[in-house]
Length: 278
Image (cartoon, rainbow, N blue to C red; front, top):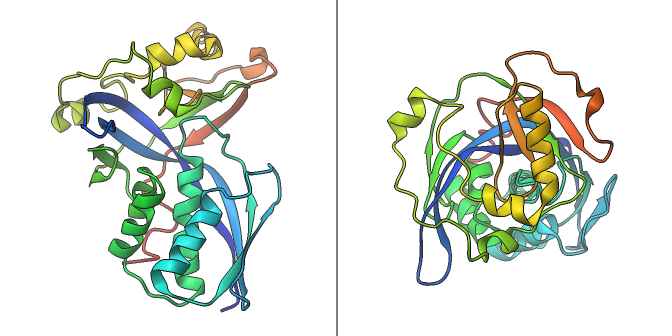
């Protein structure tokens, strides 16, 4: 095998996100449900026999040493392979949105190169590499919608009913560190109950980061107000500036501010690459 094309790297939405504590090392302890959606990036990988890792940006320009490159280098080091790869990326998931785009790209890179290079590393092996790249990477490797705890590394698969969503991304992003370092962030929410989520899947809990994010980024308020005026119940996803709402009726998006990106999305029962590593 010398190439693999049209490799999907889907985004995720946080149906809720609670901060339940903080570890002595400063990492926040969270509870959330991560749900895969069909807004995705697309990667294409080609074998390089000189051992080099190169990346080609087909749409949005990415930083030179992004998570795609870091994932490829980490897999090289962990496996000891002398093979390389050229990775082309059609970037569609917006940055600093809270949708996990970079982590998803890293996970799909690990899965694709494990196959391209014939490494046959197990999913457990890939998750260990992925966790060092970022707390969300193991979720995308796991392949299932999941109840997520710890710092994001403890996952339990959950079933989420099929649904459709409107996702809005303001023209500005929001850095995760600005939210988590804010003194006003609520860090003591009581632990959630899985049965409570199962009984009220799309209206359960809240995003504890949202109030701080609204202070830091007024455009989030603008997006939520637009959803409310359209008869939709919106909330922020993750720790970026994107918001979403479950669609229960048709919505006229013609009045959206021009700087907003939006996408009508379906949730996914499993990751498109589920089963690429076992």
